[in-house]
Image (cartoon, rainbow, N blue to C red; front, side, top):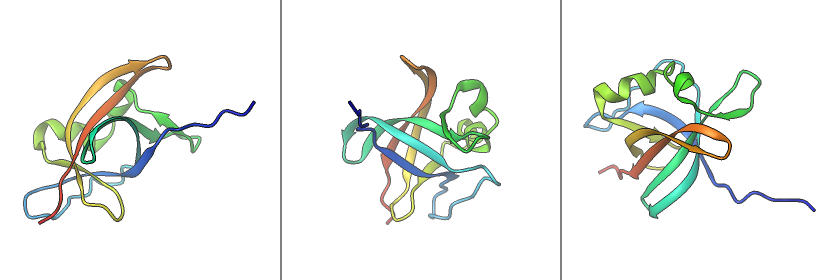
Length: 117
C-alpha cells in the first residue's frame, strides 16, 4: 500500500524587514522550507524549519546547525526578520524555538502574515 503525505510546505528566504519595506538580504544564506505544523488562522502559523543539506535534500534544522545561518544569528538583535515567499506579502518572524517529534529535535518558527501598506 502506498502512503501519501499531507504535509504542506512554504519555500522562501529569511530577510530583515525594516520599517519602510526594504528588505536586507543576508549574504548567500540558502533558501528555507517551512512545514506547516499548526495554523491558528489564515495569517498565523507555526512551522518546522528545513534547510538544504549538502546532498541536496531538505533536512530539518537543528539547534547546532541553524546557528551558522546569518538570519538566525541576527534575529535576537533585529527582531525585524521576515520570511519572504515569491508572490506573497512577508511573514513576520515572531520567534524561533526548539521543539521535537518522533523524528527528533528541530527548530520551529512562529510566523504572522504582515501585509505591506
